[in-house]
Image (cartoon, rainbow, N blue to C red):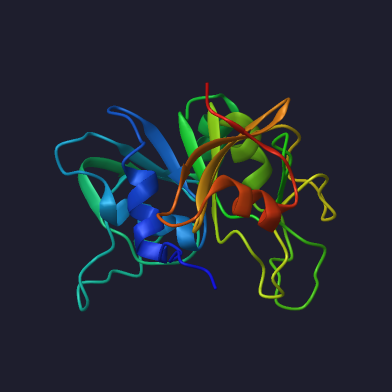
Length: 216
């Protein structure tokens, strides 16, 4: 019987937030990655970007304070910090493609051990049927981090030797933050950063079915 507890969505968001450095320009992808905005330390300046044309987003608004004219790319209401701005999405994509983002945090269907990313589909039921801005973000950002549960609903690992879904980007993912572990993707394969308490590396390798190296 497993003696470890997976991170909750909020704990995972908090774990990612602690690694975002001072002064970073960051895009948080649709879905679970948007939670990261709620856990950024108040004494750390991080500028959040949304591909629909926002720079300087704050945390989610309090219930009752939502303004549906101010939304992120996932159509969720957001807040705007002092000095924030909104603009045409073509300018926003120019920021993404021009390498002006330090970090993007994306969800994923699959990530290969060497950092290939698959986070869109060709229209299967219940899946995201279009790539949106994910390709521009995955390749344009200086670092691409993935935020995901490690296992699918069927119990299969989302970290694989080779992606079976259409690729969003090749070798673009530098880190995978999951509910069980944080892993670095390198040209040589996976490197362990951390584990949830009670889980050891041997068990994680069994779950993923791939070898994992220790950090140097």
